[in-house]
Length: 458
Image (cartoon, rainbow, N blue to C red; front, side):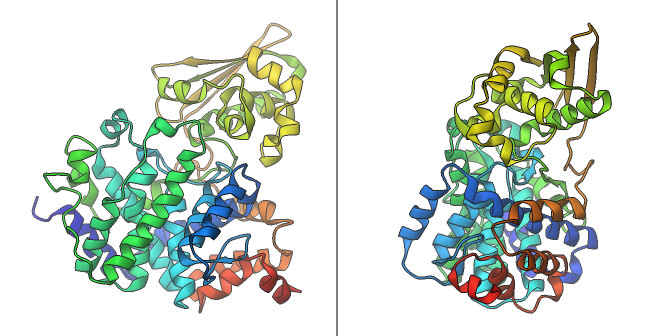
């Protein structure tokens, strides 16, 4: 290749400006930020959030950075906790080609630096676009299927690069310093699918955010690091974590085709892999006006990968397994006709009617013709009929996107009772017109729920 990939991506992020970003990519970056904050507002309902909050508070005693739906912590503490809040209830984005959540790693360090330094919304928007694009591009060059076969989990591997790009852009790193930041980010790349089924997969996300923040801050101090981390022959990311990867894919049409626009969102709080099945389940219920008592059996057909990952919880234990369970989601969508966090509270997922239906009347089956999130759902009815619906593209995917209004309603739904109504509307408006925001500090003031924020909103 004419140019080494790490340095090419570094030049891209360091030199990016607002006018170089097409309107569609700018708007999707706003959608991603709006959705990330909406997810973070729901984050306090996560089972382990109190544990992570205590851990983040113990990292340092300073309080210069805001926690979404919280008060203030140190730069590192807020980055970690905000990263966890975004992913806590399994409702954030996913870049499907790499099965990687991107916003939990990229958004928190960008918000922390922009708030600390009093930077503008336009600065933040450019940094987010740089971070989203860098993470997804690094992932494309990784050759994810090979990396996945070796057990690697994307957020802790490629996430730090996006976090470093966003933070580094806000810190004003030049292309040489940005390349070093990538070397430092890659030196912290970690996380495998051995954590699957446990909250540790979410730790990978928040650790990726902190890794990128530390990488950018250390590069700012002119710390020496390799500037060719991705393709280094001995220990480079693509050679060590994959089979050499596809480095040309990382920079193909860079700046012309925006990979960040392929980042999907989630309307419902459940695993990203089963969003297609949930889309089909809602279509089935609505199209055939099914009631819970009408259905004798539900069969869910997906790829082998999704059956292996989500068909293993016919009898789930706790909120996190319920969020991953095809069986439970089928039962509760059929019964309740909605799927919000209320469906993942103990009183709901422990309902004997739902646990029995999930374990005994829902079957997951492999269909070799299905790939990605494609899914077919069949229901055998009490009158002897069988009805079926197929989903090609899940709700929230680039092919079946959420509207801005749907994302705003998600923000309002999970912000209600957490933030004052006026703050919710002001925050939505600020993100919608992010390029006009004079200081990110004003946005973070709206998103805090600590004593200082309450006094301001009183």
